[in-house]
Length: 243
Image (tube, rainbow, N blue to C red; front, top):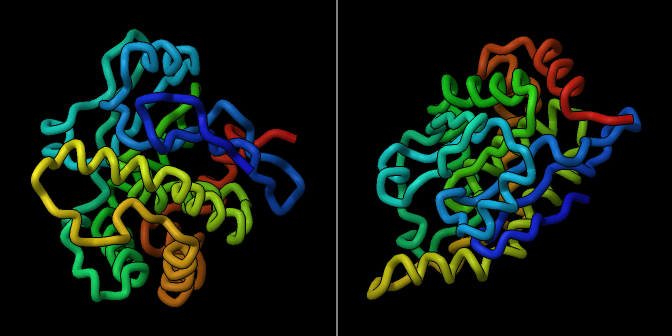
């Protein structure tokens, strides 16, 4: 199972390498990372980040989030791509505590999958075409990032159980994400107790919803995104898997 990378200023950066696939191969380490906002990188962590030799950063946030909270620093050889896959903003801190929280989150992911077709397609193409390591991230590295991770891992042949387990690793970062929110929002009340959480139930809801609508995650890629799944999977597997 993948593990986190030691950044003091990030809460949820991790390598997607280490997952096994159905045909006995393994997602290679050091080629694809997921993260919370790279705009938070401190000077010391920036040096560590450069050591990863990342060639492309895909920022899944809204342009207004980037303007407000910053983006990854510029560096020679580092390509930055902003693809905002979410089209209906909502404030997680203000979610009604009385609603079913995990069903609520899964419904928001369904909106992203429906609304963000153009951007999600571009994200997958960017990852498949990259020659060097890639990082994709949103604000917390949880929701938008979690949906992209699930799609990529599915196309690589990783099991649903491992996809859910990868998603739930964000639970290890939840306390830090809450602390970041409180630091950025002095004087506000965090109404929703589920803020920063990523329990397995959410991703199980998502996988079930996609299966109900498209037959499977690969069915969503084919019919929802209009992509050649065999070609895309072959390109991703050639770049990201090892024997």
